[in-house]
Image 1: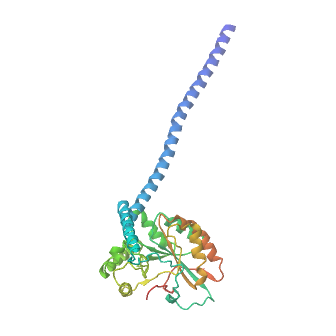
Image 2: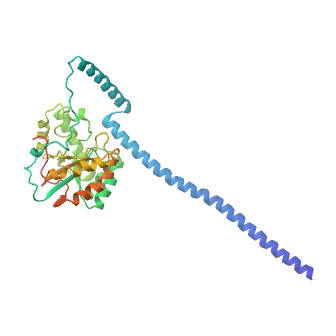
Image 3: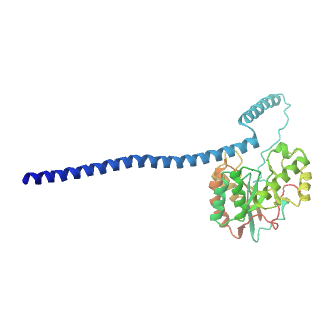
Length: 328
């Protein structure tokens, strides 16, 4: 009898051990399946995000290539410019060099008071934050910042039919910002080739924005400003073209300088905040582009500084806004 009991106990012990072993095996197998599955899910999420970033970068690159040309074209232009500079230097030594055209005008320090009513600093100062060249991969972040500070701005946009930008056009309008036009192509040699070319580009953008957002845009900013020296057409003819279409153009009297080499968060902040007190009506030029991250970084502090100024408000451009125009 004792022997049978011992055998029975041993059998139960073995049975428990076998059950524990089975559970251990099942847990090991489950873990070996679960861990790789989790890793795959994490990698898939990361891959999806990276793919989205890559697609966005490709879209932005495509836009910049369309606007400025391919890398090889840019390098060729730089090489040609260097060659021309060498020729001019040689001519300069001979005393016969021609004065080059200055394309880099510092609008932050240009006296454009004649483009608006005589200054009367007493009373409310109106500041209009404007962004050129969008939408881009930076637009959503700019809109988030504006929403955080309950500020409305004006976006002078270009024509980007890529579906990736459709929601950004709509969001600009839906969140109460002003949608302005900055040409469809932003190609100077096309826009400023003739009045016909300018009008065709203008109409194309206006219809595109209407079909995308339902807004019939009526504000315009010339690429390079109305005082650019690139146009082969008299700019007054193009202004007349806008007037015929009941469109008001806006230049600027305060510039972030974010399109200049070496610009950074500090220079952008200083260019804006230090120049706003010069004017009662301040139209501030900034850029909404993938390579203008410093503008996005500086924007919160710029808004805070403006809001801290006495009797100063930030508005989007409307029909009541006094136009700042470099030419009449």
